[in-house]
Amino acid sequence: MFRTPWVGVVAVALLLAGACGSDDDSSDAQTEASNGDTESADSSVVITAVDYAFDDVPETVSAGTTLVIQNDSEAEVHELLAWRLPEDETRPMSELVTLPEEELAVLLAGPPVITPLAPPGADSSDLPAPAVLTEPGRYALVCFIPTGAPPDEVMAAVQAFLEAGGDAPGGPDYPETGPPHVVNGMYADIVVE
Image (cartoon, rainbow, N blue to C red; front, side, top):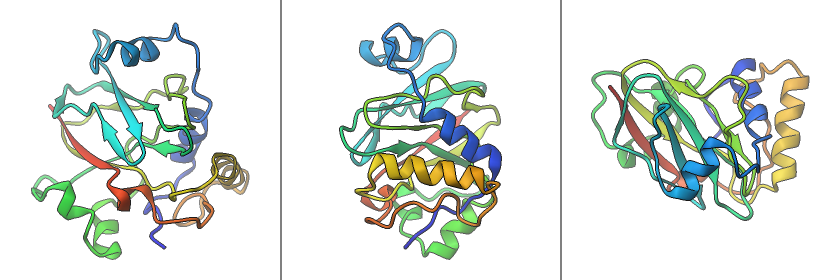
């Protein structure tokens, strides 16, 4: 089974924090999402996660933009992992996600730049450290949560990973229920200027 090619306490801590997203309709991210706007005056972009795609992904954003994931799924946890791609990488994401696992792991080396995660019906607007894209370049956006994984088991896997020190290869030990969401088409790219 394809495993998330990253490790790191900070990345997973952000995942866990993002899972505690607010259902408060007064939050800026909720207001933006309900109005259908994707970029606000405070440089936040709300990306909608559905089963199995990212919607409302702008082609470009300014450096310093905060990404918020709004999970509109009724059953699946979704994450928004972002890796900066090499400067000379021009292939479309549809081609990159079909690379052999070893080649994709080379492109997505190291921990992701941002890692918001949201359970069904929630968003990641309450991250203690905002998910900000600060460095210009092209970023791959992917979700590696296994298809059909029960939300409570996904969150338990993240919690266990953190309690174990957060340094196991491949990240949390998610339940092996199905292929990762990226295989089902949950990927996109974004350019930071």
